Amino acid sequence: MWSVLWAAVRSKAPYVTFPVAFVVGLVGSQLEWFLRGDPPATAQDEKSISELREDRKLREIAGEDLTKVVSLKDKLEFAPRAVLNRNRPEKS
Image (cartoon, rainbow, N blue to C red):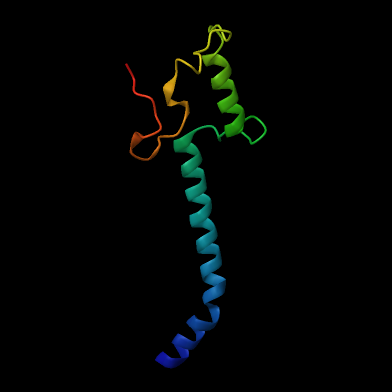
């Protein structure tokens, strides 16, 4: 008798499992929506990383005078460091 019962359960398992999984997924989705609130912004509303970086750079340089730069003669770090500093002039 047990073998007939297990065979019936085994053959009808998809018909029982799918509705149970569907209900669990639906309840979980509704619970997540309730806890999180509004869904996140769509991809069209979000800016890409490069656009965010460009906006940040523009905000940083908005108040600066870009014509005032350090002369390369005053700046000794523009050249790579030579081996054992042989070819590099000493700082005074």
